[in-house]
View (cartoon, rainbow, N blue to C red):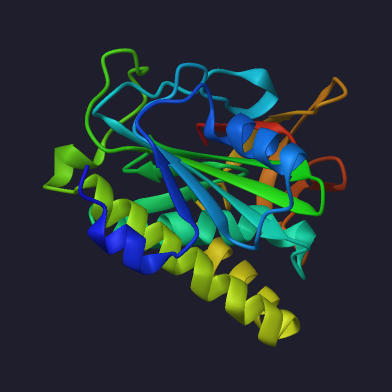
Length: 242
């Protein structure tokens, strides 16, 4: 596969045609040796792609991009979901219209999921995983879509875009973390389709909250107003019809 643009975008890029999971493989490599900041592992397919809460992420050969990047001791660990979502949304926006972020970890095109994000704590830092549907996949759910539906988007174009965005955001985090934190939350909020929607949030420990999603706080938590103000760090969220 031609990865000329991506190899220029990152000197620490490693490519595999197939792997069980880029996040799992990157974690294994971290167990074996220290890895540099922004070490990146990309694959054209995964046999056991991971989503949130142990769910499967469909990643069929020739139709998807899977990328995992190691952030060594990031300055804003609590905002890494925001960093990842903003970077992915920016790149998808280059190839499709009506791109939005569904809190906490989905990138949508006209309400259909094109990309999923997964963060994992790792020794010395964080593993940031991004999956993007380049072409339509046979095993994908009906609520999914692909960049190919909106024009040509090569694997190399999308991968190089993600690597450049993540690298630039990483540099800014190191230079001025307070300033970039404010900018990232503002950009995320501007593009978040969850805000101003009635939502049902299923909490990790059980129970649920139904209310109006009113904002994203300074640490990237979703603010939901129901019987009282709730600030959610993690939850499965469904948008309800108003």
